[in-house]
Length: 459
Image 1 (spheres, rainbow, N blue to C red):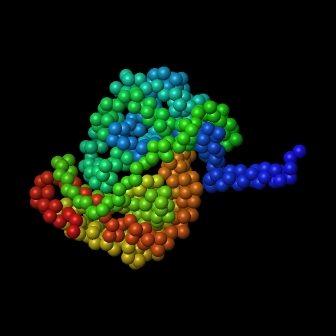
Image 2: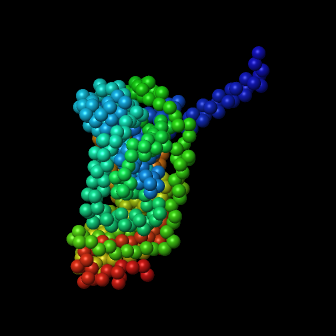
């Protein structure tokens, strides 16, 4: 016979377990459903019957932030190799034939903090599509002949990017902004690492990060969540957990804060028009999630045609284009100001940029109307982004990797709650008077006339 005290303890333990499970259940928008399989794989199902299609995506917490110099760019190569061969389809010809049979549209992306793979096909192909994804994610085959073909493809993306002066400027800014940890913010990689990659290195990446407990499976479209969850568990349920948290086992080193502002002028003949970039180390979701929200609202304010920044630079003819952005990251998101200056007023443009930045923290730098307009724009953008069902999994997985599902769900409401004081606090903490990296890319002939280094420099 069980004693009353033991019954009470068992009952209390059951209540605690139920409470823990309830706490673990993330908040999600209407029509979104979540389940965590016993092996740690999180599954999100989004019921959306606008079109008779289904999209499945697997996202992995992998990307540039997991890469030291010896692996720089290999998460991107790994993404390319995903679509080559696996146990069920042992060469790319068979792989591609199967995508045609499924009528699938497919692709993948590699970012700083996420790698994702997705297929869109007829809703009736959901089971077959999940099996196809299962074979590709769990049982890849890295053939040397495939890698010989794909290495120059990946490196070619890098070379094409380098032909753009804007990319060259951005890349140089990253080097100054992140120092020795540049590879952990640059998904495209290093030429020699890409061109010497081996199947063995692909397996090292797989054995570090490609586990169910480090992945999110999202199923979206004209589906029912009960059926989708059952299929997911049947097909992916025997995918073995790593038994450890990869991000804890292979921790991300802390990014060293800038100790002073850093300027450079880069000459290149491909820069027909000069470009400027000013970058700061911004908030991290892990340590200051509130500022990531304020950052988005402030960036939207500065993008308004009525903003003081746009009026001072574009309306006055000092620049043809200005954009200000913050990238939400779990580990230090960058804040970037991009300016295409009037070549004939380069010095005046730079001086006005510095003047405007110095005013950002002023409480009257933007109006209540501009604050409300920015919030309305963010809300409209969100509504617009929800209109295409096949894009919904990517929105969920970006937040799952870099923030959280609760953050994703609460984002709209949190934007509307941002106050002027929140924005000023963010600016003072990350921008006003803080060290920055400033870069200018310019044609050598124009620089001979202007001697940009004489004024484009830290004071």
